Length: 242
Length: 308
Image 1: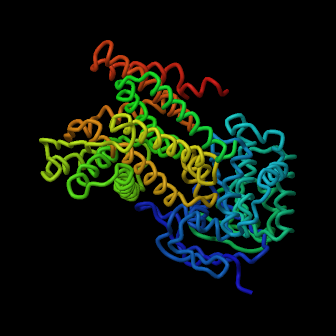
Image 2: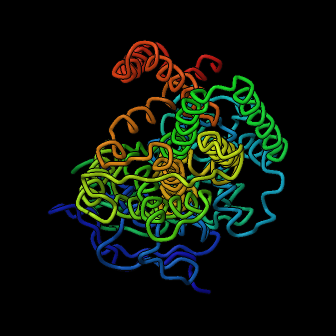
Image 3: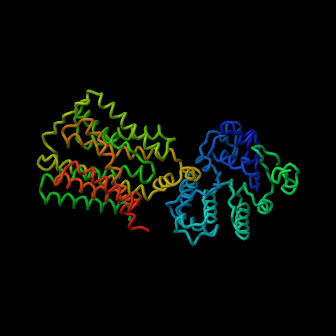
């Protein structure tokens, strides 16, 4: 079976700064992939190139057998690839419920017109999943940073993606909340969603990932079994210094 | 409220407005009322792009005047009923809106506003140098001898036409607000990147907004030559159209269809009264003062008072 996501030779530079160089990556359908790397290693740039927010200069991205080069972000979301933003970017004049309405109206409905029949109930179910149901009618401005991360995750989930890219959705969460989000992501995965988790909380990454990819200075330095990789000398050096 | 119910109610209100104007039976009421209604349309049209979608357009005069000058051209080459001219004028301005949207698709915020202002200057320069429509001398338009209704009273006819256009534009603005399109516009206004990530085709929606907004401005401008009977670039492209049209939704409130109406009726009426009772130069001063007061005291407009 061909992989769900196939990245080959991906490169991105900002002026003279090479953010990503020759990154190859495959993700199988239903896989749970952890993506780690020190700050500034290109994790978010990779997410932006995958989701179409940025355009990579070299290499190509294939999703579900389709070449994504030149497709805009909304087209990729409609194809079934959703991402959350590392810094939450809620629609600030809309209630939480309405925030989730946007992907339901635009991403889900573009695939299946009948799918959004009971849209208000769907929004509530999604908010329930991330524990924000009681604030459905509030504005994002009333939320804490942590709640905004949950909203960000819920909005990505609302697009009903085949591939979910969760960009640091757990940062700042308490031990219990990390466990809750982990359980949620695992449940989504059991239901068939492929998930790429970008995270600094190693406990969560190791508990979640079936496979781990490490980016350092825009290059992929490791890819494989999580437990083995975190003991690899070059990975340890990248994180802790020599 | 369902859209059909709302439109019926709107027509009822419009009917009442017209009935009252007839009861007063003073030509000046129609003359001044026309201007207020014209601003209801302009403010509503501006708000589709500026309020719903978050793109501040300063080029109102260009869209408005292109509608007016389309009428001048049509009047010279192929006279036809006014509503038809308005449709064509709206079409021309809608296409200009589409073009503006396409050329400025990468510009946001202030840069978009400056680009639209520049566009207005370019269009004005073109018109000023086009002698077929009068160039800088301006064009004299002789009204048709007979208006279709009201025993030939043309001002009453213009008033009625503008009233009809107000009903249509407000009905469409409100329908958009509660639709999938409206949610898409609001998503673009709040965060364009996040909107894209949520599957919103931001470019297409922006083009719909600029075309719709420009089109209605053009329609509002189309009857102008018959109203003023003499149109020159300086008055057709007057900056006061832009200033008023932006001030009205800001004073009324930009988040809902009702805001531009409040702003237009309030400000438009105030200006008309001031023009008659004090001086016409004072009307712009009123706009300026009100705008300053509202920016300080009620940044979300009059509607903002009634929400939290």
